[in-house]
Image (cartoon, rainbow, N blue to C red):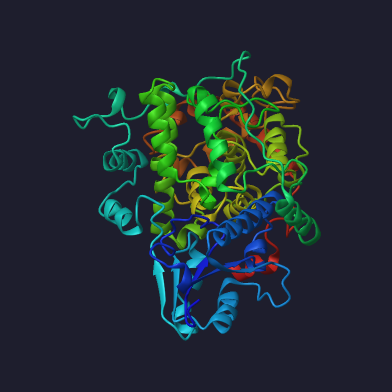
Length: 528
């Protein structure tokens, strides 16, 4: 090993052998630094499974690098002199290794990137921050695309990405199948004859079990449990999970991607987002595999296009959107939502069957699929006027695939419309009818989805009109939602009052969550 090597810090969501900071490096002149630090484990009180997933995946990745001949300086959370932060641990590594340079791939989150950009002034050697080219769209490319546009419409961005990558494109430059987007074919209600194959589960090995013990000991008061922890924590396991999706579930992924079934947490979903977001899987490779399934006649165009759109469309778009609008996005609250997050988001104790089941899945698995997150949990928070910071903290804490770059745009801009419409063309507000159409939740719920007001009415019904009424000044001119007010205006005053009074009574009954569930008051004040 060189006396003055290159120091390469690798963060917990950068578990990729082809990472830009590793590319071109030699094993005899590089020290890789990996760090488990308290700041990252506690800036929100992450779900226990999320911490286990990241720490275990980090330890396995470090072992993989060492087996390949790399020199890895790995700092565990409980190491005696652990400084507790990335900057503090890099400072200690600089003392140990006297590097001539530090090479690091840019951070995915704003607050971490701000810390990285201070390293050049803190350390006695040059610091090179390299772009994260695991994403297909660079920050500059997104800025160039967004510049001058009145509306940053994801569909327009997505079509540009299709052209650039060539995915599902014909030689004549037109989209495969004749259409760009098959979302209209991907809205099937749950079928009683649905029989999705089980998602692969991975038994924790000794490394993972050691991390599970650490998490129970140090983060025992965090949300979730570890009894059902079976996430892939290595690239090999993640590839097996991907193999199973392409072999067994992608065919029906599209039609049923918005369906919800009580007690069924996976259905036909890929369940690959945790592995993609921490770096174990290559998103472009997955898109190519999906395209091949279509070319080979093993999956229909609507399923394949829907899967690819989620990655090169939505995933790339929200990452660009995040960096384009930070740091202001974090504090946006254009609808002036001030209500505290209800306690039942942590306990799961509610008579609303859809919410109870979505929170149960979240608690047990650190996962709920996108429609549960958007149209059940998120829709409730939107309609009830829950403070965006409370909702942001909750989503960031409870989901194993949640990093701020993907969580914040989805929650603040998509779910809560807190940015006022830079991302979404309308608020995704819905009554109980949508949930009833797309799930089997309502049939055995304590509330009646067919009842609009009064005792026993599905709370989504009065909350919907309560939301629409209090935001009329902002929303009545919206071309996608404004016409709904003609329905409201045709109601007589008594009916309107019934809706508003029923909603008010329900909102008054909500017990606010105790402070500190997701982000303690001191951590919140520091963040703000």
